[in-house]
Length: 247
Image (tube, rainbow, N blue to C red; front, side):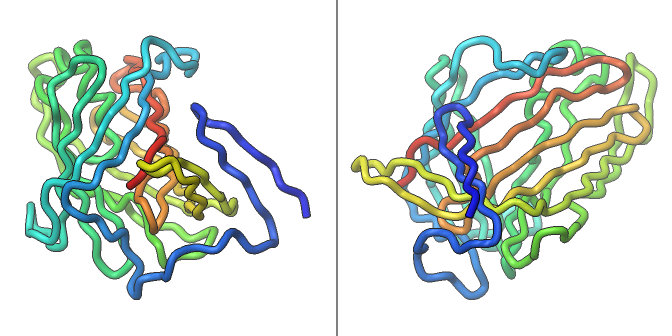
């Protein structure tokens, strides 16, 4: 059996083919991440240069704390709310996850770098909102595909009103990944994480980009790569976010 180890920002990922992975906790039916209030997930995040795609700038350490579970938000139920604090001095922000029937939804997923780019915001007037995005599917096999989002947007470009459509086409890749991180007590945690590729287009705004996301049934997103993208000919930086500590 051939085993290849990849290292992404200090996170070990073993790519396995044709063999079983490590022993994992009991699988939920339907599968979902069991988030608990006051548990914390620690990530590192770094910018990817808009032109080269290489990491640049300082590393931001993000602590995501679960503050509420199993409530309704923006048309979804079984929602989990996180408050995210940053080591780089940024103001805390909030993120939302919803789960149903083995599907893992993330509110306004994948547009964070675009919406934090001052040049883009100056041109389009306001952040792009895509609502709930189907970030991962726990029940699908490699090679499966789905629509992550198909959202109509009202936008402007340099003051000119435009009608745009955000389309996120997702495919589950054929690689199986075994991820190792540390718990809050220092214990090694080994678990599987599926790899989904999001191909995002902003029709009407001439925008496109690709996100690579690794999500596990045990701990949710473990690696998220928002690759550099373009909108109206402007290159926008990406960012890589890596889980380094789980409850």
